[in-house]
Length: 289
Length: 345
Image (cartoon, rainbow over all chains, first blue to last red; front, side, top):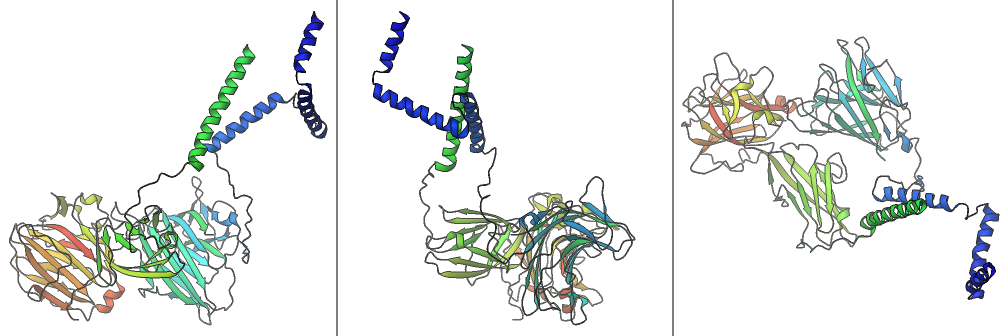
């Protein structure tokens, strides 16, 4: 009786013996190839494959709804074919806490509660933080900070010891630029191009403990002229509801050397009158691509 | 039975995930844009600032209370909308530099909207537009506009973005009442001042509406470090220019009556000053581009001696009252660092 049943089954299975046999053979052959070639037996891994499929489905689902993002440009080369500079994409953003800034000329102190808050003791005339690599020509720099001193911002940006920008020179409102010009390379104040002023005011000054965004654009020309374009977005000291203001200054000066080279950049604080400590929160530094 | 139940749940979950993923992917990448009826096509490139269309070779005036006007550029089909660049006062392209503000390009509607991230100074500005036609040819256009600060006193003074009570001055003598600025009568030992945030080291034009409360007006408008114009100096008719270490300069008298409304006009062009007063009748409003005839000008002064000093010291401007003033109402102030009056030309 049992044998009859099996015979019937075989008979039904072999209804079209040529086709069934071929399908079965092909499937088995493929399985055998994969098993012998890669050591994977699909019969054993059915459950695992289902779990992997579900996991892939979940990842795809999360990507589709925007919960995770993938950088599809990761495979693209960063080499643009242009002359390379020493600045790499990892240098484009820094926050003054990372190791990209090294102490230079003078000693800074940092607040325990806020490492971005740096300050000078009254006896220190100046201190600078130098970026770990020189900057290439024609790069736009964005520096964000908050002045925290009582009476004056006294924030300084020194580029290659060639020129220096002082924001709030013993006050909370002026912008001035000094450069080492002439054969004896003396520091001299540079007038702002449009106004002719050696110290130009920001509208309403800068409010203490408010974010100030500063953009510096430079261009060096082969005739030795250096063009400095300075933009500062700031909140005035008064009125209390005042909106953001924009300072724009352009400066031109002749540098003593005729050959361009990447320049070191340092930011810091000056305390020329040595009367009280000065401080600021240095928030971020960006080099535009 | 349990295994079947688990299998069912798994298949159900897979189906749900597949369905939601397909929905999001479809919406994100494959959904066709809704076809909107095209806007009426513009024939020429037009730039509107706070709904005022700029005209070439004209003095365009933009009146703004916020000093953050909205730029709307309408781009015709024959111009490559993405090639368009806008330079404000010799800046970089403000449409692409986030420092200047936010730009929204609407390609189907062929318009670009730019909103500045900071307050523009109330003065004359230049605007250079560069673009490429679809045939690749480059073109440019330039415009000028004078941004005029407009103050209607719709908010309390403490919310103001431009008016400052200078240090050492009491905040109680200026107040906003019924949509007007009230400069109150003061006590003998008090000093008042209301300064404007922006300074001027060159041309300036100020227009405002004045309503005296009683017969002693004594309203001062000052250019700090230069001098102050007093309207109704200790009375309701004398117009006087006071300067440090200089004799007082009297203008023509003008009778100011309490409860009446007057248009006060003050301008400085190439350090030549002039002041005019005109009564506003019925519903007449202050016209900030009004040209005043010689008959209306009450005081003129050519500042030769102070010119160098003022060039290098941008002047704060503002209002003040003499201590014996009965108080005044001020409204509809217009201020700009651009003056187009014809005196001396």
